Length: 381
Picture (cartoon, rainbow, N blue to C red):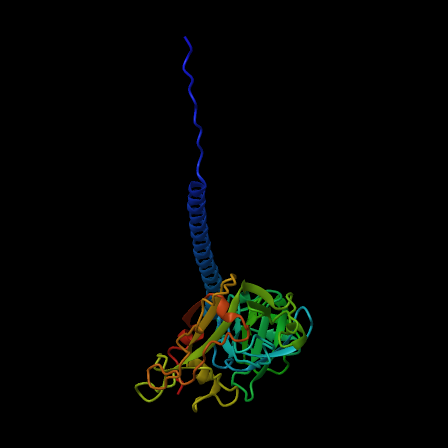
């Protein structure tokens, strides 16, 4: 008997089925790539925003800390607004700076040359002495290189000091001395001011007084130590010498600053209101002050500094995520509100032609000046 034969039929996918499978696979790949792209864009956006936030916060914290300390050791009204001349420790230049807690430097200021366009800078001064901020009276007339003071224990060798007449001179121009030796109540100093009358005042700036300039350069917040370098020297700024103008916070592209002034008379017609009545960039003139007040009283009436920064993330985005320039409280002029803001100081990022292709964080704060607190009981009118 013959066994039956069987025919085995083998079939695969048809061309149509293969094409359908390819379409489904390609659609899946496209969806996955789109999800990956969206995830990467979200990650870059979040990371870029975080970078800008951190850089801006660090920069703002640094400035706030410095401004809060500014004025320490120079709060006496006989010093405020005077010119101080000294020799820098590193490049040996003879420089002159205004003895003011925090000075707002606008574009073109000699103390901060060649900053980024349409940004402000700050000059901050304070001492680190251990004695009285009101100074130390001379016990007798000064001789060449020698001062006899009432509290010699508050001085140390190499302290920087300033000698000032008991009555504020006009114009007020001062120089520094360095303590070389302490013997009893006598300070041996170099170079010293001969013929200072008894009851004149010696102000101790400590061993390392702080005179710093903060400015935006090439999109970074930089600082120049004015005790070491002549920060007004144009060759240090253009091109930027990073040994002089040291970067301390990257991708800070704009800074604006204003004083908070108390320009209103007290309840009795004199004294201070101790309340900011106006924000502006008016630096009290060293000879006439402002609004009819003397220079020292004008500085006693300078209660705060308001600063604003713009930080930029590092990610270039061709979709132009930023459509309008960031704003801050000083962007729009307003002479009606209290405190008034009579001058508009908007941010301007147009120096970079691609500024719209980055993301930004703007932040601001108002910092009270310590010298204003110390002068809070002043009867300046």
